[in-house]
Length: 66
Image (cartoon, rainbow, N blue to C red):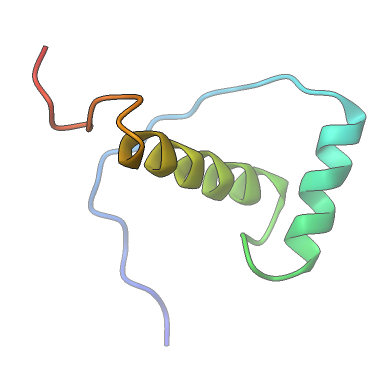
């Protein structure tokens, strides 16, 4: 069964990293837990870390107004 289309607006960002980090992302991708490629895996890890920071009270939630 296909997953539903993401209804949230998305934007593209570009990051530069080392070959070692890219290799680590590719290794994690191969586990099948994070994504279908290194970019998907990086996205999943980034979201996971942001959630952790929010739970620890180290950053405001995305809905918090400034």
